[in-house]
Amino acid sequence: MDFFGPHLLAYFIATLHFLGTLAAIHAVLTVRTAQGSIAWALSLMFIPYLTLIPYLIFGRSTFDAYIQARRQANQEMHKAITELNWRPWVEEALAARNSQAYASLRAMPKLGRMPCLANNQVRLLINGEATFSAIFEAIRSAKTAVLFQFFIIHDDELGRQLHALLKEKAAEGVSIFVLYDRIGSHALPHRYVQSLRDAGVQVKAFATRSGWLNRFQVNFRNHRKIVVVDGITGFVGGHNVGDEYMGKKPPLAPWRDTHVQVSGPVVACLQESFAEDWFWAARELPPLLLPDTYPDDGVLCQLLASGPADPYETCSLFFVEAIHAATERVWITSPYFIPDEAVFAALRLAVLRGVDVRLLLPSRPDHRIVYAASSLYAIEAVRAGLRVFRYKPGFLHQKVVLVDSEISAIGSANLDNRSFRLNFEVMLLTVDDTFASQVEQMLLEDFAQAHEISQEENRQTHRLQQLGMRVARLISPIL
Image 1 (spheres, rainbow, N blue to C red):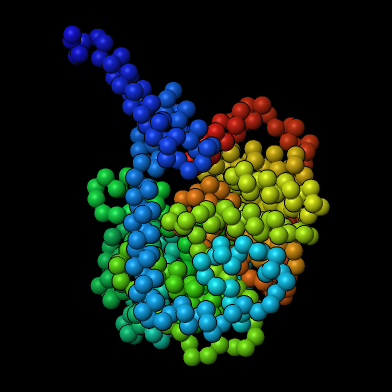
Image 2: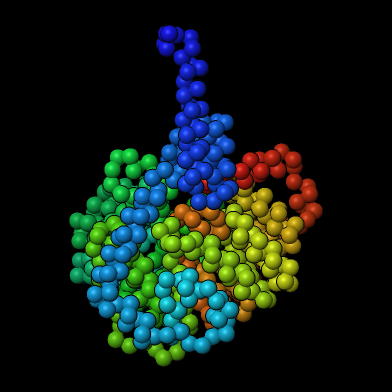
């Protein structure tokens, strides 16, 4: 039989379908969610020539190995920290004060791997100017060490300001540790990194394990944004380092985002989260600093660091627990609204309980397929009785949760499958009526600049648009 004759194309297609069937079986056995398994399996069986290579890149064929390696690295890191008497000092000396609001989050003491701590001071940072002015001011005052971690660092105006500042502080003898995600910061030029290293800054990329084939695994992403200065002042939120986050890049400008500045015992937890990620990249601990004393009064805070190496789906369960805890209101802002069934069911139940449930979403897309899938979920949310708003002035990127009158959470986690199950994320939970009222005022101003989606608008959605949304939703579990 002449394999190089006119039947070559038929043999090639048959081989692709055979490999696609094998990959589909693998997806059914390994993908975490039923929706993801169905999305991959069907596409691999019927259109393998379009999905086989994407599955090798985005699928879980090698991801489990990374999870096991990460867990092993975490164990080694925690052993090293235990020898420093680090977490025992925090947990024994500082306990969460009695709080009825925190008690409503009954799963949080076990869901969060870090303790809930009292006596913290928090400051709300609205948009890029306030955020990076505060971060740069804190770095300028650094005396001992700076821990700096972002998903994206760009070599643009803001990135070069950071570059110059870090080199300046390194020249003063301050220990600088910079961690960026290799996928998120793929455009960061080598000269940027090398120049920092030449100046004495320790720089690492968070990535998969070494090896040529591992370069194709793009799901292992660290989406956290953490800065800690001298073990005293910390920052966490939704911004990355780039001019777009300062609202300088149309058509998404003005950019809407939120960060939090915090001082107090919970900064030790920020350092521990950074240490986990740094240990994975460098196999050594960064400096861990504790002040001699803390104030006797302040805000109750808990850091929730989540990721695929957790024994359970921490991020998704946090949203479910927060929504179930609501008795009066739950307001959520997120750039992406692609919830799993558990989170969507929790939102529906909250509406049935009479809770004021509001979602604030962007009106402009930065990823069109994700936006289309999110739009269909938004339509279904309105039908279920949720109030859904589209922020009009520019792109909305903030990740904020406000529950009742005391509980708020701000960080890096989106309301989608990637944050729930694939990315490493971090959220700062606060329990304080004064701070919650500040968050409420911020969100009220955002809602005032938003358009509420009505039932009538949903019915007027063009059928072709609805078809596109439904196709996008089919692949939403793998976005």
